[in-house]
Length: 333
Image 1 (cartoon, rainbow, N blue to C red):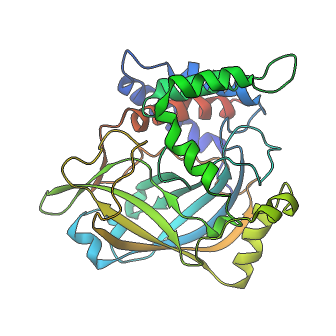
Image 2: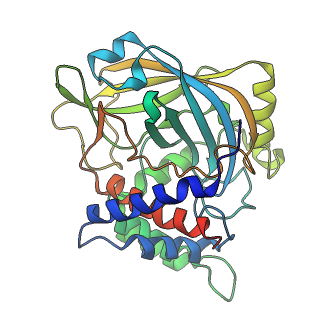
């Protein structure tokens, strides 16, 4: 596949930045302030992502199920194969972070729909996010700023952050209780936020989705955490892809009245109705340098008709923050 070039995405980044700035409330931090805090926490690698910097590209397709039409008219669920450009990543802005770190893993997808339309998803391997408001995320990045004397975050600042931001607790508890996955292929990925699903009758339901690996979920043992090495995830995914295509089932959870709609730190009850709405198949894996995913800005607010964002301040904030980061790497900063 021909490599995407930066100029093709420059206009999109500028349009995204100018259009999405209006979605940031007056009482929320500025997107450029938040990106600067990420840079302060992890440093800057010119021309690269500020967060989830360490990643791997993949290509495949998605096929929706007929059952999905009950809930959405999106072309994503036409039951026909939709080409996908995927990126798997490690959370944080340190390109040398070890793959055994107790940090989030990400799966980002760009679906190439008919007539040049796109749909994008940016997901994490935790069922909840670590901030109910953008301010919490900013404060976390500020708490992670390295102490000049030690080169590491100040433990007292992190302690104070956790005490003053209870909305950060659930995600941290999940990661503490669950070892990192043994492979990107053996991890589930959650959409984190609540979205509106709109069908052909213009009926709307609230839903959250996750991608469940057909290979099963597998985590590193305590011994494997010590021996896996710092850079095993990309090779493990490549090796798995050489055996056969890798698949995930997309599962939609249907919300009920009273379920959290605008707070990604609160999980929905497990007994909610769950419907398989499609299958993602990854057919090839490659290093991200020069590959198709490298220059894509996986803004989760790029959505085709039939799915719309909920009123989640963190979801709204991601778009302009992504645009600021994207603009910087387009210019080589």
